Image (cartoon, rainbow, N blue to C red; front, side):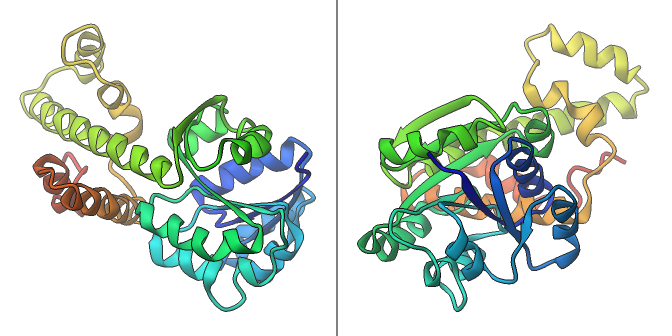
Amino acid sequence: MITRVGYIGVGAMGGAIAENVANADFDLMVFDLDEAAMQPFAALGARVAHSSREVGEFAELVELSVTDDAAVEAAVLGKNGVLEGAKAGALIAVHSTVHPRTVRKIAEVANPRGIGVLDASPSGGAAGAHAHKLLWMVGGAAADLERCRPVLETSGTDIFHMGELGMGCSAKCAQQMITTVNMLAAYEGFRVAKAIGLNLDEFNKALHVSTGQSYMADRWLGSFFNGMGARSRDGFYKGLIPCLTLAHEAGVSAPGTALIQQLFPEFPDPS
């Protein structure tokens, strides 16, 4: 049973997941390039590392929520990275939205050393993590998933094994594309509603029981209608890069996803 967990990348999303791990009484060590982001975890009793290598030396399971493919590779494969410290029998779970080839590249180095790799992609955002309602889409060996399941369940019990390594990332990319097109539809509809003077609260209630209902529309007023912070915009933009790359490589046109990415940084400011 896993008892020692390392978490690399404790920003809004990673921090919420790591907090759940700490509160579930796992022995937690965190690392982030932003030293200030780690201080709340020290107050929770977690260990604070000075490098990804130190996390690898400590943990039976290393979780990562960093910005993009390059950051994942640097944290795991780079100098003072996880694999410089991890021991045989350890697991690495990548939560970042990345291209499937990134986790496969890591596995090519990690597996011969007896270190397992999962792509465990969450959906639900920081709010979902805080509410313990994340959805997990996981690729990799079923036995490795079962080993880390108790850790994942601290943030959400909806866990789907999507298949071999890389399929968790692939599922997240496909799901993210559906989400973004729903966002675009809600964005356009609410902008018109605002411009013509509709009571937005009543319109939102009506929309919820209409054919225009969607998860994104339901949460637009509370989560998106006041705009998105610069860091969130940047993260969302980067998160669509592997989605569009994967679609291109599969020979699938994805004009809706491409359009919403190009609307940044204005989207989703409805003013």
